[in-house]
Image 1 (cartoon, each protein chain N blue to C red):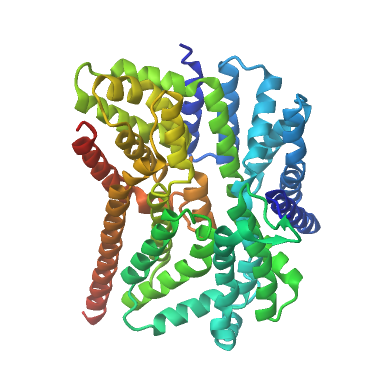
Image 2 (image 1 turned 60 degrees about the vertical axis):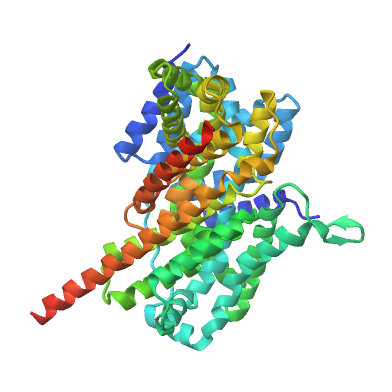
Length: 231
Length: 322
């Protein structure tokens, strides 16, 4: 067994830990692993180039930028914030938990591409969450504002991840089925997908509770700062 | 017929535009960076076709271009361009336009949804409108184009302003936009270099004999750890299954394959929430939302991931050996 290619993993860990620019770190790791595995440089270059261009779909999100940029220039975020501020009864927790539910159910039907950080979080969910947080705790500081945005992005990720495994025709289930089929065990996709349901429910409950706790933390901070002002 | 390749050409056009605008602003490193990336997007299909035909030269050139991008990336400082409209102007425009502003933004998910649901059945003169591979993503690209036109109409702004606003946002994201592709390539190189096999050999070495619970725990933690390293549960799954899942858990201890596969994969997903290697879910959103801490999204997810992992593991343990 050749353990030397594992040094590529070490390059990644050290590079990320020291907060070097991630792009050269990743390319270095690939070169280190490939060369230590005994790949010839021309082979390695071809492998790098080929795998890079075969995952071009991962940059599709940049196509959303012109529309979103134009709308933000025309005040989309400001409008989303004002609208949230006017909606009575719409709290931060209700907004995020509602979004989590919709996102997870859509992912369960295989519709993972319809929402995401570029499509829905930056233009809509993040500004609305900020406005909802402002209602609880007026005068959010920059760190708190970042925290609210990060929780919105996390909610989007969790809804997507733990919903998509329930859908039978999507990558994960087919990969599991294919692996077993190669090794002589025949399973129907449905029997695999079904066992993703408990975790889908658990993920929904856990993230909802965490969102609610986050809201309560903001409420406490708001109370504390109010008390400070009175004193 | 609309194919995903058209979306790549559209991205390339946008990248070239960004490069040109940066060149005009004398930001040469940035201009070269985006132009090189644009070339990779235009030439990508030719590279793949030549590779299939047995000619590796275009792939090698693409590999050299990737290394050039890596050398340029540290010279791209992530400086946000100033907002082009003042806060008061944006507020005034928001009050004037009201809910109309939501329409183009919602068109992006709605058109994508529509294509995903009924795209298969659409045809013009007997020709299918959408090619089958990657139909949802083709739908997303179409939705973005429609949304730009709609946004220009709603905001009563010229179309090229959309491009220039888009360029502003792309420059703000900077090299982080590239990471998902690079990490996918890294995963491929790791697989070809036998990193997976080495890790599963190590895992088997530390594996205790004759204890089904500990074996399951090593399997589940291995899924998490390996996903953290590779950035992708799909890469971790075959390795951990071939090393531990199938020979030990299924064959020796009689674990249910369906439960082990499904929940094992989900343990890996918990790892995806924790790792900067899954750049498209963790680092790109942080850049898009202009967070000061690039690991902000991971920090917000960490405790959820831990909780979901523990719960999934316990459910798996309770069910898998029945």
